[in-house]
Length: 83
Image 1 (cartoon, helix red, strand yellow):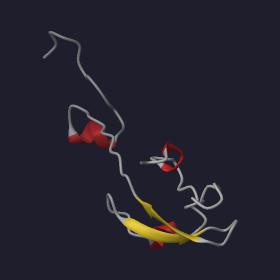
Image 2 (tube, rainbow, N blue to C red; image 1 turned 120 degrees about the vertical axis):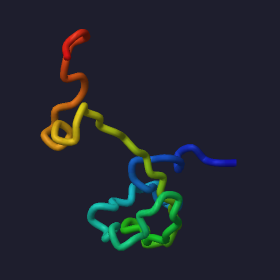
Image 3 (cartoon, rainbow, N blue to C red; image 1 turned 180 degrees about the vertical axis):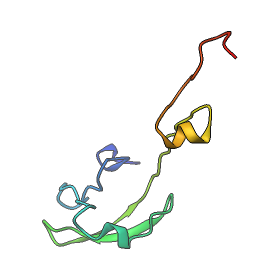
């Protein structure tokens, strides 16, 4: 059974001591960033090893043209009935 305290957290949590593993100060980018990748880490608090899995999420921005998308103009550019 999955312990929800260790599932889908913003930061990996050490399963030995419950401390968050700061991925931004622990060379996280040396780890595999692909979706569902599994990696090992050593907790800075208790110095024990644990494994973690990435769960990537996606968000999207839309615009009426590529130019608007790159300029940060999102959503409808004309009111209904305008040509």
